[in-house]
Amino acid sequence: MDYTIDGIDGDMSFLEMMDVLNEDLINKGEEPVEFDHDCREGICGSCSLQINGEPHGPDRLVTTCQLHMRKFSDGDTITIEPFRAKAFPVIKDLIVDRTAFDRIQQAGGYISVNTSGNTQDANSIPIDKHDADDAFYSAACIGCGACVAACKNASAMLFTSAKVSQYALLPQGKVEAVDRVQNMVRQMDLEGFGNCTNTGACEVECPKGISLENIARMNREYLSATLKG
Ligand code: SF4
Ligand code: FES
Image (cartoon, rainbow, N blue to C red; front, side, top):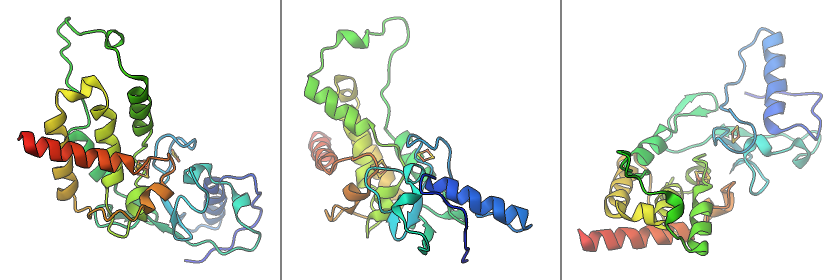
């Protein structure tokens, strides 16, 4: 469908522009365009739109909700599509089902803690500053799926590796490390995501700057788990 929208200010966010479009459609008695959103501040990862062929649009290190209309020119035609991947089926209009990511996370993206009263205080476990920083950077992944949408193979390696890495770097995560990486990679494959061929488009389009180093770390973890298994 083609729509013409008036009254768009450069300081509006991309989603505010979509709100203007939908208000207009509702006022005319037409069906609004459905799109996903929640926090509108770059945290929840739900605003997954392919804008002019790029996940989250032309800006770098921002989500669609943080993208401003000043990045476009008056009169521009903007093409908006849902993220495209076999593992992200379209629900309606611009909304895709990204629960495949939830199932990968459920397969191993956690630690088991004994809460019987003998739990060790996390602050009593010394952690190297570099490891703590790297774990934090990996944990910054918001599960938006842009890495999958950017990849020609629809690979979920950047997402999965970020979730594996945030635990692999910390002592609390080492206890279940072997099962975690094997189970998460198995689930990733079961969901129908493609393989990584190191083109790096995922890293370029990731709004949180998740590095390819995470994929290298996950591959090392997987190899190590296979040798131990
Ligand atoms: S790795 Fe980046 S692009 Fe992929 S889900 Fe996480 S935040 Fe989104
Ligand atoms: S709406 Fe939450 S990250 Fe965009």
